[in-house]
Image (cartoon, rainbow, N blue to C red):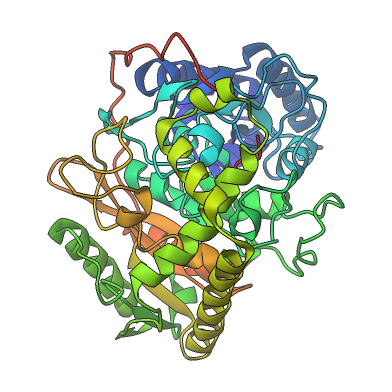
Length: 489
């Protein structure tokens, strides 16, 4: 029999409907993989064996009676430890958040998953308050890459990406304030979507403001569409949420590769100035050629962005101010125990004035206006997700790069948090070391269905896929024994 842990959510639902396997059996298989992901790459902050088994038994009975709650009823799912989950601590990678609080509330996306009958397997790792593009924290240690555990999974939703890649649940909820679902998706060879801001309600509001999105992390675009249909349900706790979607995202994928024909696609291999590793550039170029073969109209053209230095500075003002805000009331001991990089940016963020912040907002508004005009001509923008593949874990930037902050090696991701556009990463190949390469699809605001449609077409055409990662036998070093130290993205 096929290993149930390797199936997508859509495939599991079909198996459940046919009576070929049950949610109980699928959950048992996934829990084994979750333990493996915990010991080999440190992807989990907790695994709920008892709760998952209980939820799976209830879902099995619903499928037996042919009364499933949704297309994801009984499907195992994980939740990044930034999002509230009733009954479990949400420590956000920080010892400043005590585990012993009363955890009685689900975040909106978690509540929608629970209502849909998904089996909540566990919570996945994050850097402290989700502040950077790799996943390590003083509380939980570093999360490794499924293809090479000594390398980073990316971040800040690195635990979720590693869990999905290793079969520890085909669905995961991540968050993305500057690339945090797309970065680890690219490094770990999975699919992830940052939806249009407000499409998925968020509560509590992020300290990083309207940069932060909740998004699906899955094996492919079809599963992401299924999950987005579930988690985009309204929630009164988020005053900035969009009106409910008027049609199904999963329904938008019907037709497969044919749905790409006639799309106007802008291909920007370097955003004018980014140095991209040759293997990454070639893999993305091959995928873009396949879009053209499928009938898309592709132009090599750069979007109207200002210099990346200007964009990065504006993003830093907004991001670092958020870091200062989330740690504003920490005492000296809590500050001393922070991730050193987070401690640095909080100090810088606290020095910005209101005029500095509003100047950054002006840059953001001008960028959004420019991209709005750009998408009057183009349905999608295609870029690499990242200019590199995964580097050593436990560091913020590649060793020897001369870089200081994670935003220097993520120039393709954070600009589209500034604009609140939907953007997805999908795998499009591997480098000579066997590490996954990601391609990014960016749509206009509210163009989530178009992004998903193009990504699904590439999956159907055989472009967006990488082999199952190896299952490494050796666990990583134990996390630090002395943890340091709210929000998060």
